[in-house]
Length: 201
Image 1: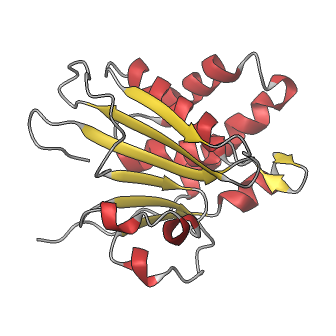
Image 2 (image 1 turned 30 degrees about the horizontal axis):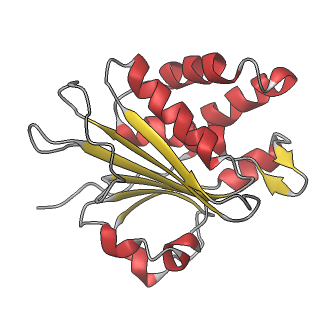
């Protein structure tokens, strides 16, 4: 993970209402704060949230200085993508630059659209993890913790224990008896994500 000296690092989270993309954004923002950064995170969604696009933008400076820019992020270095169909629906790819890393919820052997194939893809079957751990709302898998675990490994800024401590702190009042399942989902996300190929010169 890198950013130009003195510049900010941007992370975009995109999902659908019900998948807990907003919660994932809160985990990521809080985890970065715990690591000594000063991130700014903000969600974006419509009132009809179930199934509708939900986004969360995070900006921080690698030099740990405060962030004063509150505008929506423009060119994320990492994108956490819960549903690949959102790339076309929201016309996301034109805002991504060469070298952008996608943490993509997809099966290991599933084809990806041509519009994302040019980027560095870290794959995780978060749907399967959530279903196996019974983290669902009706038939919709809740992906926040599995994807947060995958992000922790891909970003290279924190250990899985850092992310687990964040999940415990942020969600202790809301998930109750599902806390251990969520912690296991994060552990599996960290362990099972297939990392992208290294950048070549």
